Every structure is written in C-alpha cells, then in structure tokens.
Image (cartoon, rainbow, N blue to C red; front, side, top):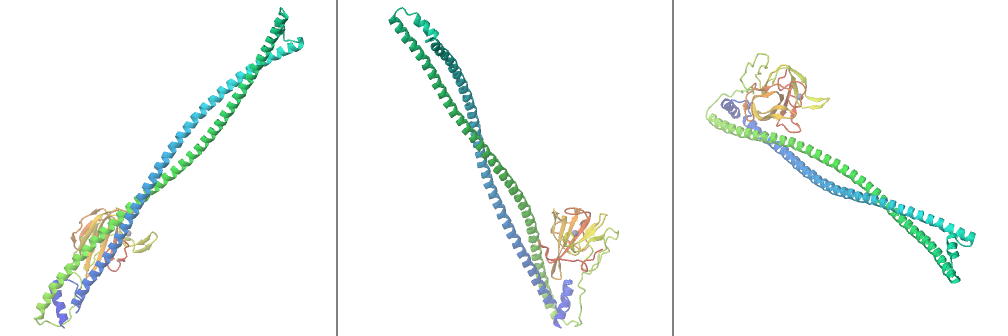
Length: 436
Ligand SMILES: [Zn+2]
C-alpha cells in the first residue's frame, strides 16, 4: 500500500512515464542498473575498437617498414644495374678496339704474305735459272765477269752469300708471319672471351631489371595496402567517436535519472506524512502532448505515443536480409523533398557527413530507462547539430540521396541500446515506430 502511494507521488512530481504500477522505486533502480549495463557494453565496444585501432596502427608501421626494406632493395638493385651497364659499356668498347686490332693484324699478315709470295717467286726464278744454267742468270753474269780465278772464287762466294741472304729474308718473313698469326689467334681468343662476358653481363642486367620490376610491383602493393589500412583506420576512428559520444550521453542519462530519483525520494518522504487514496493508478507510460504535425502532406502527423513516423513516403526496403546482405534499417522513399522528423524525444549525439550514411543524424533516446538510438541517413541537409535536444516530431533534416545511396530515401535505423559498429542492437522498427 505504501509503495502505491509512493508511485502516485512520483508520477505526480516527475510527470514522466517511467513509473508503472506499484514498483516505482524498483523500476527506477533497475533503470540505472540497465543504463550502467549499457554503458559497460559501450565501454567494451570502445575497447574493442581501441584494440582494432592499435592493431591497424601496428599493421601500418609494419607496412611502412616493409616499404623501407623494398626501397633499400630497389636502391641496391639500381646500383648493381648501373654497375653492370658500365661494365657492358667498357667491355663493348674493348671489343671494338680488339676488332680494330685484329683488322690491323690481318692487314700486316696480308702484307707479309704478299712479300713472302713475291720473294718466293723471285727465289724460285733464281733457283730455276741456276738449275737450267748451273747458276742463276744474275749470279752467272756476276761469275762470268770474273777476271781471275781468285776473282771468280770471290764472286762465287758472294753469289752464295746473296742466295743465302735471299733465303734468310724469306725465313724471317715466314717467322714474322707465323708470329703475327699467333698474335691474331690470341687476340681472337680475347675477343671471344670479351663477347662471352658481354653476353653474361647482358643476361645479368636482364635478370636485375626483372627483379627491379618485381620490387616496383611489391612497392605498389604496399602503397595500396597502406591506403586501405589508412581508410580502415578512419572508419575505426569514426566508430570510436560515435561510441564515445554515446557513452557520454548515457552517463548524462544516468546522472539525470539519479537526480530524478533523489527528487522522487524527497517527494515520497513528503507524501509519507499524508494519507492518500489507496486505489491503483496506472500511468499511461507515454508523453501526453499530441501535435497535429504539418498536415500539409509533406510531413507526417505526429503520433501521441512515444514514437512517431520519421518521414512520409513508402517503405521501399524493409528490415532484415535482402539480396545485397543484411539491412539494419527501413528505407522510406519519397520523390518529393520531405522533412525528416525525430522519431522520439532525444539528444542529437552526432550530426555529420559520413561517406556511407551521407548527411546523417544519430539520436539517443532514454525511454523508461532503456536507451534507444535512431539513425537517419542520406539526408540532403541537416536541421540540427550535435548536442541539441530534440522533441518527438521535430524536423531534423530533409530527405536526400547523399552518401552510399541509390535514389532519394531515408534510411532509418532503430537500435535497442547504443549504436555499435556491428549493429548488434538493431531491431525491426515495425510495431514500435509508426511507418508509412
Ligand atoms: Zn536502408
């Protein structure tokens, strides 16, 4: 009986729909513990996101290290390639001079061959005439011109000396020729070895260039990985911000609830001294104010319950699985530029542009100690900013087609509890929030 009296007093003092039947205080205590439980959940989600950010940061620094290694490898490959190229150039120049040398040697050999041939002919002629006439014509003339025997002997020995000299010259020519041919052979061998070296260097250079191309490709991959990791980290930071804001909102709700309870306790204490009626009074549980809404057709009428329809139009996509994957909300489409309304009393926890949600608003609602979060995405413009307190049915923006959206529509999400990156709290708003 006393509890019922307290509940009446609380309902009268606070004027809110949290008190139902005769269990006012217990319900309120449960509200705070429920809020704290939700705060704990957010904190654990935040710590998950934190460790993801840490992991991402580590991955990024690892990618950076790999990039440095590949850069160093590319640098040393470049050095090897330029050294090899230099060697090829040197060897190619040496091949040119060697070929030149071979040509010069060849010319000398030809010259000597020519001389040997001429001398050979001359000698053969002399030998033939010597055989025909006993002596070569020239030598015979010399001998016939002798005036005495001693002169003859002298002349004969001179002839023999000349013949010997002819043969010596011939032998010398032959020796020179042989030496030149040996030199030429040696130089040709050198040329062959030089050409082999150049071929080896060329294939080495080809291999180095292939390695270099591979490293370039690896580098490009690492740069791409870095970019991906960067954008991933951006997403994580976006999540972290939302979670932090929600945690702050819940903390605020806890404080408000504590203040409300303190007031209720004071009122209950005051009521204790009075004798009140003992009949059971149940609260409606809903805010009493009813607005007629826009009425122009562009905005839906504001419902009398806790929730109201966020936009006019038709449901183009419902909650749940669809071909493109899980849909965590309901899409309300409308060809006309229509206002988007707050689905319930709440606080704007975030109003910003997201690459996926486009212009979007996150509202936090505390309804009977339960936190709900609503999301309104793809709006063309926003009418309220972060931190603002909004009333059920208040215009918060205009329907649009921003972010990852195809066609003008409102993507509306309802979360029982805070919004989380994995959207585990998303529920089907059908039967809770009035929809077209
Ligand atoms: Zn949607």
